Amino acid sequence: MADLTAHEFVQSATAETSAKSRKVLWGATLGLRLPWRDSLDAAATAGYDLVSLSAQDLRRLDGDELRRVADHSRSVGVGVIVEGVYRWVPLDGTPLAEKAATIEEVRRQRDVLGAELMSVLALQGLAIPVGDSAEMFAEFCDRLAADGCRVMIEFSPLGSMPDIESAWNLVRVADRANGGILFDTWHFYRGTPDFSLLESLPGHKIFGVQIADAAAEIRGSLWDDTVKYRNLPGDGSLDLDRVIGTLYRIGALSCYGPEVISEEMHRLPHAEAAALTMERTDEAVARAVAALACPLSVRACGESRSDAD
Image 1 (tube, rainbow, N blue to C red):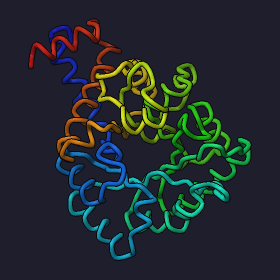
Image 2: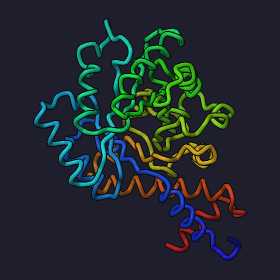
Image 3: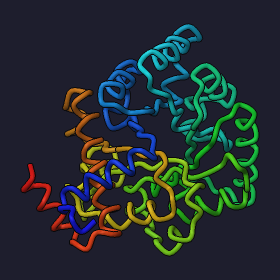
C-alpha cells in the first residue's frame, strides 16, 4: 500500500468497488422525458449495467411497444429499473390521481421487462400515519415478491417521506425482505442529513444509490434546484466523501450511479452525458473509499490525479 502513489491508490479503489457493484444510469440524468431507446442506448454505450425508466412513461406504451423495450434491453445488455411508482398509497384527490401508473400496470411493466428493482415515492402533502403507510408498503412489497422484485422507497424533501429517518421507519416497520431504501445524496443533504442514523443502518437494506453534488445554497425553488441545477460529483459543495464513505462502510454500494439532473447535462449528447457522469461518479466513490484507508488527504489524492493527467 505504501508503494502506491495517491493516484494509483484511487485507481485501485475504483477497480475494487466497481467489481462488486452494478452501475445504474438513473434516467433523469439524460432528460426528464427521454425516449426509452435513447436511454438504453446511452447506458449501453457508456458501459452501465442498468438504466431506470419512469413508470409513468412506460404506462403510455402498448403491449407491443413494451415488449420492444424488453427485447432492446436484452439485445444491448442493459437491465431496466422501473422508477417513480406513486400508487402504492391512495392518490384520490391528488394531481397524480389520473396520471400515475396503477399497480396492475407496474406489475405488467415488471413482468414484461424482467425488472428486479422498482422505486416508489410518497407525494407531498399525504398525511398517512407510519403504521398505515408501512402496512401499505408491506402489501405492495408482497405483491411484487412473487415476481422476484425488490421495492425501494425513495425519500425526498419534496415529498411526504422527507428524509432517511422517515424512510427507515417505513422499511423497518413494514419488515419485508424485498423492501428497502433508494438513497439519493441530493435528497439526503437537502433534507435532514442524519449521519448517526445512516451509520447504524444495515447496508443491505439500501438497494440503490443516486449520486449528485449541489451548490451550498439552494438555487431558485427546491424543485428548480433538483431538476435544473444539480452538479457533477466534485463540482459542488456537498460532502460526498463523508456520505459515500459511510455508505461504503455499511455495505450499501452494491448498486449505484449518477443522478445529475441539470440543464447542463441535458444539453449534452446522451452518450456523452452518460459517460461523463459515470466517470465523475466513479472518481467520487474511489476518493471516498480511498480516504478511509489512504494516509494522504483527499485533496492530495485529487492533486495527484491532476498531476497524472
